[in-house]
Length: 163
Figure 1 (tube, one colour):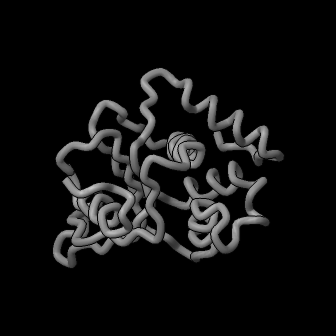
Figure 2: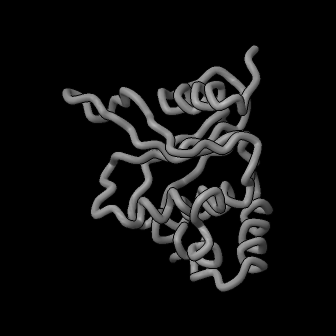
Figure 3: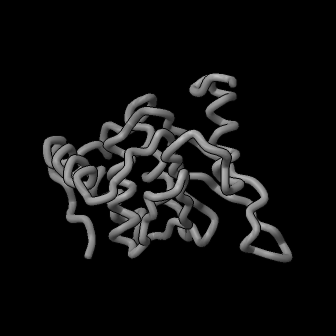
């Protein structure tokens, strides 16, 4: 199954609201899509994560759409932990593009940055296993390299306060 192309901003808001009503849904405090560098000897080992955009206590509609796109791409999300990280694929990108359809034309400059990220991914020939999505559900010790980098980006962009 796939997300059908959303035709209006009202339909987008309805889709986002529908996702948030799922059993066990937890609103992320932060999320973003990162390009990851993997180890040469062990490709499962993530060495670093580069985020073009991070969301910190904002853009919850985009978070809901990303969660729905992951679910439609057959990725089981776990809301029970403090974070969730998954490798994204072309199916995820296609679903997100369909959900963000009402905003594709106006996603330039400072408008709709998450849509711009998805548009950039859609224009790549093969995203392979080089991109991962990260959700932080609570401010706890990081369990993954990607979560560490997301928090570092939040600190450096002054989106999160120093402790």
